[in-house]
Length: 338
Image 1 (cartoon, rainbow, N blue to C red):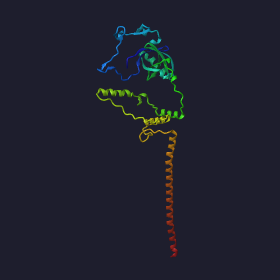
Image 2: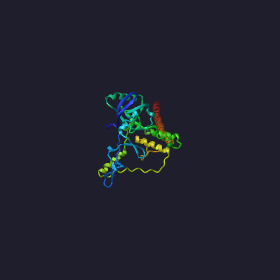
Image 3: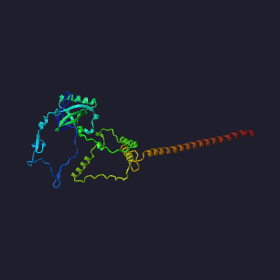
Image 4: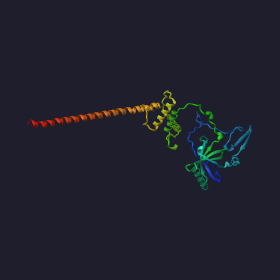
């Protein structure tokens, strides 16, 4: 685990839990440095004092606030740590709320809270159980990086997670971005719902085959190829657009077919392997016609064959009877003539 980013306590009511805050996420992005292209010398940013026109070390740099032009008030890290605010040294739980009442757009970076020693274990576990059993989240306040912040506490795999929250007044209203009124039919909504169902996956995000950063993987291939003196892999050619403009309904239907095909390769497609697109009413009618016509022919052929077989059987029986009857009469007349 990484080093703690903050050490303090969680308090709710009269309960205080010493904790250490650990980062819960990692950044796997590939980061570039700036280089002088002529000689590949590293280009760095240097911290220079404007008044002395010289580079200064980190030990000489501190925080300051300009309250007026040319008038700066210096504030030390020690003064920030001793600021007279309850949340300066503690994550103070102020309320418990239903988890669904938190707008996801407010949720920021995440952290794990580690119990600060054996004495903190029992109240730590107690808070975990309380959060789990009432299916609620804890809203808290804490002071980091020069300001008081809003946070959300929840339980993840028996560990308390802390999410930084935006203050309500930091969330911009989307009212002016709402599209103008449009006409949407029930059939279009039903087809959109069908598309959502066909694209729904039940597996967790970490197990999903699509939950991978393809850009970083492709960028690594480019870097390794160039490092080995090879040409970077070329992009796969994409099929040019057909130029045919599909209406919304046709686009939805085609999307549903493609989604089904991605999950079931045996789903309906044409001879070229492309998903077929039909109008919904025509599709149903066509299916009924195709299914009924062969069924009638099959039944008719079976009925004709049955009648033919019955007729042949009747003819054979009659022939046998006719053949037997003359033989009996002939046998009866012979004694009389004699």
